[in-house]
Image (cartoon, rainbow, N blue to C red):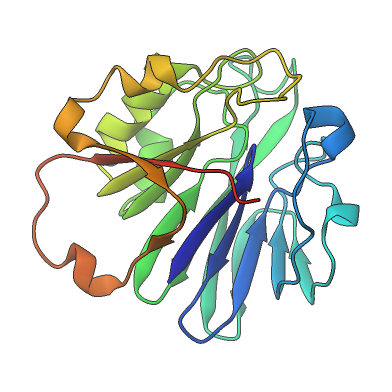
Length: 218
């Protein structure tokens, strides 16, 4: 399977069969930059804010998932887990859906705009995780240190940060550097344009989580 980052919290996940999932499409006018509208099979949206549910940012799609529950689309297994967008049980920013995908035998977890503290109950619902996609920019979501706590508890093989400030981003969020500094240098992989993975990449026991910082797709 392949993972491509369109910016913010939007990824295209493509299975070896060619089936594809787009997570959290965003409004370029709100974020400050855009992307080439993809054609995909499935769109997931973690919550109802325009930087995460901008369906006009999708050229073509067949199905949308925007709620909690267990779903299946042509062999892709999807679990939507309820959570909160803030640390006040949703009183400040509402609810958030975490999506876990099973594609090509790989467990990918997209945390959406997670804002609540890490809890044993939530971790238990999400494990096991091979690839964790997590916001690190703070302010509207968990910050770098809280994101690292999720990483340490979920123990994914790979973590890919999202929802942080890059060139042209107009949102009041931090850059990726504070999160990057929490990892040993030898575990950090940068300038990766697209991640290509399969189940065999996770057959051996990995002692430490690798941090992969994806380049934004043009």
